[in-house]
Image (cartoon, rainbow, N blue to C red; front, side, top):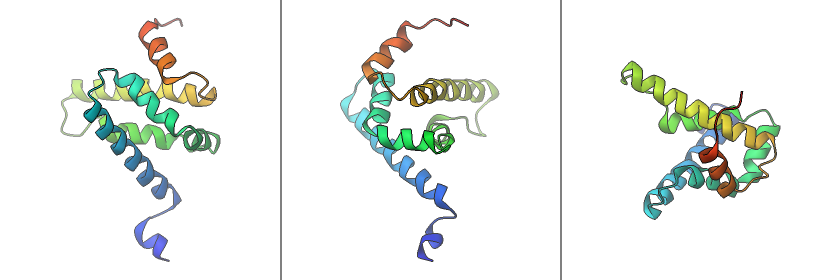
Length: 123
């Protein structure tokens, strides 16, 4: 019973844990002053590879997208251009991350950073 006093459902537990992890990453990123946010973020996911692969395989990877949106997504008080830009950024970043999860996170964060920086859409 105490579980449901603190959480509405099991997904809320996961959301809270992901929020804690991304907060720790943000603090670490700020303290290091590393200019490569992409490599740093992919390192965060790589560090917790088992968790994120498990979420993906369990059909719960949408919680990773929600976590990204919670951190840097659009807010109601943003003007339209800012909201659209933030939404585009979050969903684009998640697209890369999602595909990386799907493919088993076989590349290192450094490789992912290089792939992204070297990429040109080939659709």
